[in-house]
Image (cartoon, rainbow, N blue to C red; front, side, top):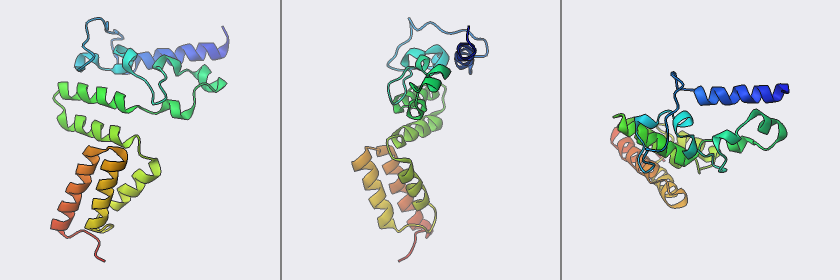
Length: 170
């Protein structure tokens, strides 16, 4: 066996074992795919069939060999919004509703260019934006990206910042 194939095999074993201390992979035969539970955690081990990258690659397609031969690209290694939604379902079933909300907010942000996310982050810092600027960002999030949860978050920030007097004054 070549060294790269051995490394590839080791990488797959590690990926499959991550977060699965007893290394027992659950059968997917009796799992309801419409709503996941803590029994489906970790997804990479117990529900690998549901996990896809934003470029539609399966976890099994993400190999060292693929990286070396160029069939796995950096964009293949990003998380997909659908995977974050599955993780949110698991978090809810574990009674971790705030974490589930954070995962859903993150899922909405995936489609927004990284540079724009950083601009929005900076705009949300105290005394960096006017209320109108924040409301324009909220509209952009909702209308351009369909990010309704994040849009509501920015609208709420605009209200709170106004009450606390931490909006930029022009």
